[in-house]
Image 1 (tube, rainbow, N blue to C red):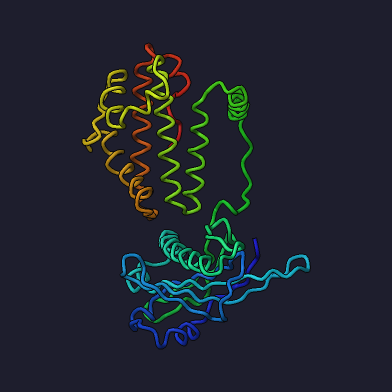
Image 2 (cartoon, one colour):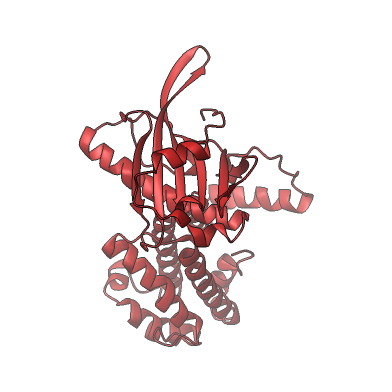
Length: 337
C-alpha cells in the first residue's frame, strides 16, 4: 500500500470549488469528506471535480482529484488522490458513528468505481481498475461539517480491517487438534463439504471488502453445491444429469421433503425455506439478471435468511441421522454463521 499524508481539502477550498455548483446552502454546510490515494494515476487536471446525485437522488456526491507522488525506496510512484464528499444535511446530523462513516464510505466508493469504469472505457488503460478497500491504505482521514461547523481535527477511519496486522491469539490445544484434523480430512479429500466451507469464506471475504454483489453470487453458488451434495447422498442411484433436470422448487417441495421431512414451501415466509427464497434468492436474481449492486444493509438482512435455511437443512439431516449416518457425520451442525 502507498502511505498517504492527510490531504483533506480545507472547508474554504470545498466552498470555493462548489461556489457555482447547484448545491443548497444546507448541503454545503453539511458534508462528510474522506481522503484516499488510488494505487494508480488518472490523467485528470489538478482539482478536477465531478459531482453526481446518489442512487436514491437524495444527496450529492463530490469527487475532487489531485496528483499524488509517493516515493518508496527512492522510486517515485505516480498516483491520484481523491477527496470523496457526501453532501447530506440528514446524514451529518446522525453523528460520526463507525456505522455512519462506513455507510457513507460505501456509497462514495461505489460511485467512484463508476467514474473509474468510465475512465477505463475512454483510455483503455490496463493500469487502472475498479477498487475495493483492500486496494488502498487500511486507514484514511475523514472530516465532517454539521450546520456550518467543521470538525476541529480529522477522524481516522478504518477502511479495511483485513489490512490491519493484528496479533492473533495462539490456538488452544483443542483448536490445534481440530486444525490438524481438518488439514488431514482436506488433504485426503474425505469430506466434500469442506469445499463448500471454502466458498463460504470467499463470500465473507468479498463482503468484508464491500463487494456485496460478488458475495451474494458466491453465497448462492455455495448453497447450490451444498444442496447438490446432500441430494447425491439422499438419492445415491441418481446422477448429476438427473439433478440438472429437477427444478429448484421441485427439489425443495418433493425430493428433500420426501427424505428429510419439515417445511420446504418456498412461497411461505413463515418457514426458513420461504424466507430464504423470498429474500436472498430474490436478491441473487436481481444481481445476476439486472446487474444490481446491493447495499450493506440489504446484504446483511438477506444473508441471515440464507444462514437460517442452511441451519434448517443441517438440523433436518441430524434429525434423520439414523437413516443417513454418513451424511449426518460429514455435515454436522454449523458452529458459526
